[in-house]
Structures are given as structure tokens and as C-alpha cells.
Image (cartoon, rainbow, N blue to C red; front, side):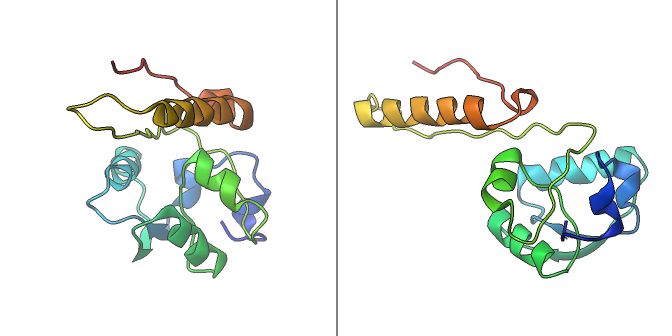
Length: 139
């Protein structure tokens, strides 16, 4: 959310806190949007869907410009912290999955393996452990 509004003073944001708020969202085609919409529907909470954008960086830019509030993943929050935004924990925790796509018909290069290992280490070091679930590695 933009730094300064009433919600920025809270320690944790819950669905009811966002009732009636202008909301910056991803488009319907993205799985994260479907999860967010389902969560608010389950709580009976209506948001004022203000604007949509494809990428999380765009969500952050629009929130910083004062177009509303939003929910973003922990990596986006880490990247955009200190840019006129306030990031607060959301309860219930929403899981975001990240994947690395590799060719199916040949094995990945050592560089890809090193990159994936680096990303995993980064996640474990930089993010709150409740946001990091390490799945098994595909062969």
C-alpha cells in the first residue's frame, strides 16, 4: 500500500481490512488473481477493483501512485521495499509458486542448475521461512 494511509499503521492486514478499498489487481488470466478473488469471496469481502496490470512491478507502481492497495508475493515486496510503499503481512498467508521451465527432451545445463540453487539459497536467506516451501527437484 502507499506509505501513510490508515492501513499502513497495522501490523497485519486481514481480508476485512480491505473491504471497500480501491484494489490494484492482476488480470483474471493469472492464477494469483483467481486465488485472491476466491479468498475475498470466501470472506464475503468486496473490493473496488480499480485497475489491472499484468506484472507485479506494475501493481507496485500503480499502488505507489495512489491508485489503491494490493497483495503481492514476498519476492516482489522485497524488491520494491523503500519505494514509497508499505508492505505488511497478510493473514491468511497466501502461497505463491515459482517455477523454472527447462527443456523436456534434454537435460539442463550446469548453469541452469547453479542458477536454481542460487535462487533457492536466496529465498531461504532473504525471505520469511513461512513463505518458502522447497519442493522436490524434478529429474
